[in-house]
Image 1 (cartoon, helix red, strand yellow):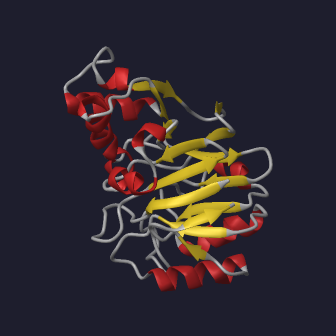
Image 2 (cartoon, rainbow, N blue to C red; image 1 turned 90 degrees about the horizontal axis):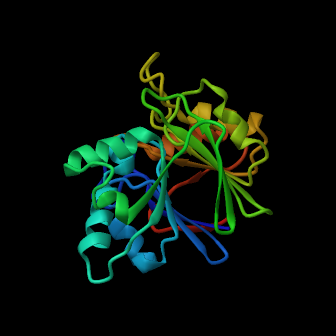
Image 3 (cartoon, rainbow, N blue to C red; image 1 turned 90 degrees about the vertical axis):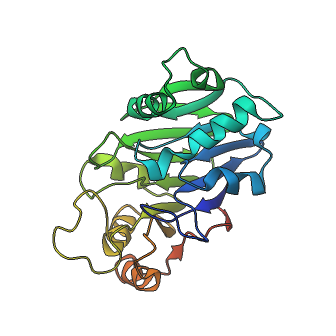
Length: 249
């Protein structure tokens, strides 16, 4: 398995870092996970768009799904039209994008993308990848995910606070890609539906993750302090999701 970071900026993109987006590969299978602003253009640096096998989006907040609009226009009106690309997401993602585009479920968007609703407990096979979903602790329906090629495991927190049973997906993962939106030292009660870096490290250690990588850190937060805070609770080195970097899992 391989993870390529397309973007990792939390809440809004930075000049050199798109919002959330990742390319997950196993063998000949290529899945675009999260479609934050700027990530479709980043994806095309690494992959011809006709090679995307499926798309997975965790929730309807714009910093995770808005570049589906860019992809839709490219797939619908570009020189190499595509149809029936499997798109897995909570229902609200589809409703929000169809409303934005002024379409219903019979419109062109739903022909370009083959829409599949996912929620807590669902499992899907995407080529050589098995993906499991769990409900995250977030104000809108959101799914954390666990990806496996049968040998290695990637766990992804999506946007979440510390509550609910999504942590089960992290158990013994070879790489845990975890949000740290609140950075190193947030004020009490800052945002209960997000994690700080120390919480990310603590969850990784408690669930037996082999490696931890922080993501979804807003541009105004010091990433060096966040990594240091996570290393104190994880008790080993912690990586940062850097746009353009590829990692073997």
